[in-house]
Length: 183
Image: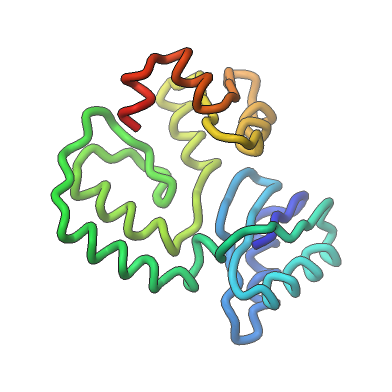
């Protein structure tokens, strides 16, 4: 996987197509109009990074990850997950959820199952998901985990967002054990 900064998603998609050469190379995370993470065969991703750099990317960085997430190479994992999820009953959601695969709101267990299955091999539509949340009036976002990548992207997008960043422990302290443990 690699992060490409400073190019539109359409230009990154073109770089992936040109780099594929019979291998998998595709957008995996659509984080902002100027940041797209790509995934696929390591050699194709490396070629895409070179093409993106030649196309004017401000930065193109190979990411140290354990697998090529959110691309066709994850199909075996998707198939295993699908089998397990089809054998599980999912209740309707207690509150609406914006899925990262569709950048759309869902409310039923069946919709959640389908989105969970498809998200394994499909790109994360993060920016579109965030836009939908903002359009719905959400103005506070909490990134739980060790990184600040999404928080920084959120803070960069608009001053209407009040982004908070912290570790899971801070989330628990702020929102209470019950809310954090229900996730």
